[in-house]
Length: 82
Image (cartoon, rainbow, N blue to C red; front, side, top):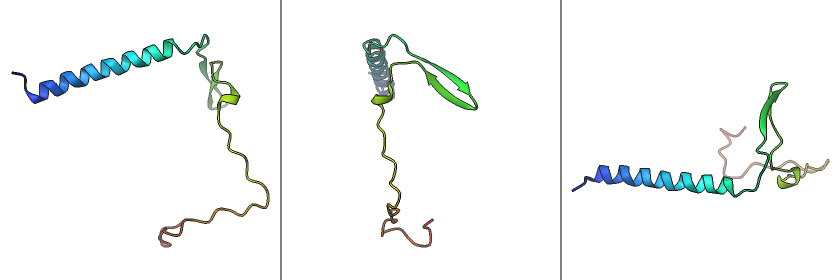
């Protein structure tokens, strides 16, 4: 009879195999012909190409001039507040 440690090991390997196969399947079905490349320019790494378009990324609106800054939550200890 197999020990509990052996069953945990086999179960972990089986789960890792299933998750890896699911990840490969998801990438293969993504429909992206150009995976893009990473290049460094001026000390910053950029993704050039790829399937992500600018409109796919969420954009947080910039705060308007004159907006009051957010006050810290009331439950913060003042001795450790910034």
